[in-house]
Length: 471
Image 1 (tube, rainbow, N blue to C red):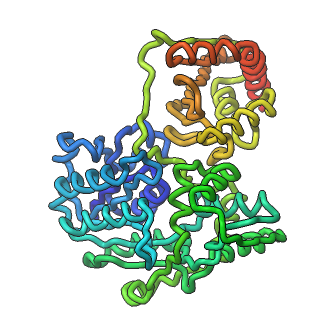
Image 2 (image 1 turned 90 degrees about the horizontal axis):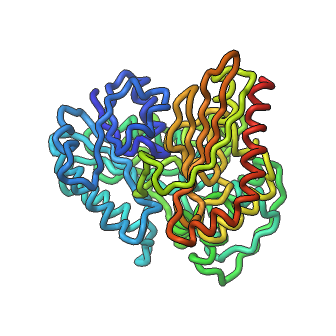
Image 3 (image 1 turned 180 degrees about the vertical axis):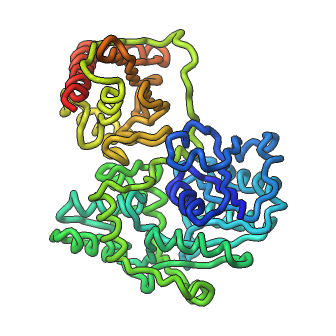
């Protein structure tokens, strides 16, 4: 089949594409910035359509023809205040362009049996309704997705690992119905062989409480944990606590927490009847699979891989930008030097004054930024568009260049960039710290940290050289 995938840089979309290709399908992806998928193993195996779903007059509108099916994986989970209207607008534009596609498959969220539905769950339901009104759709509704790198799993993992004793809201006793990511993918692929089915709810065989999710994770890790529910602690306060303790930013913690404030239970009878060959695994088994993937460093995609509705930037000139450059000759090949600077961050750290980086990460977390805890997907490999601690990989071209864009809270825009160029029998390593200040406060910010930056960046470039020469 010829299949279109939207949301290819997201958690589910990035996992679907290699599986579809593995089954012999012809795959096209609709992306805003093709640079963000250039490093994927499947990049040269797919057709790339460049376009923004919010651009109703874009050329992409005329290119969604000749497809047998389409996957719609676009959500604004971490979008701004107007994300509901943006989601509906994007879905409406997609409907206009995809009228000739006979089957669209959408992944939405389970809705609680309550009149008080969160804005984010409401938005996902409205997106599904918009698609169903104009297209032939199968809409899968799922609860928390449990898999290596998923936001729900990372929230449970970090809370349980870091807090032996937890004082929690009383609604941790509410029933939820998570599902393993492998089962979500199985349903999405199996739907290709069906006619459009409308709404289908999916989940593990029996619902559990959010408290049981944390205790189940603790059991898998051999940890003793004590959880004491209290009748206080509002969803907003709980989300901020999650944002402080885990890598999940407040903008994403809020919809995750709001998703369990009320019981969210699936009616899986229809899914069992329509897909009898799919037998979803239980929660404990899903946790075990996720931990195995993490242990073996085989995390395919992460929750933080997609940018949502945020803008992307590309430096085209240096006017008005402070550039602090250091170079050093490295007695190693460009390939070894490239691997060295691509290994920074995550567990390895940043080679100089790690305590200062951690303090900066805590400060950023307290001010609503991502902090350092996002870590990295792989200890060596970096892909365009993915997160690295509180940076975003803006460009990576092996074995020459890596550029990171800062996503921590700063009064301006900041980048770190490394280049590796062959020089004699070794490599010329060029390291640049770039800052484009926002007004006078930005200038004050940069120069007040000049001495600290001088020490850190000097030690960092020497550290990269040492790693490359030690290979």
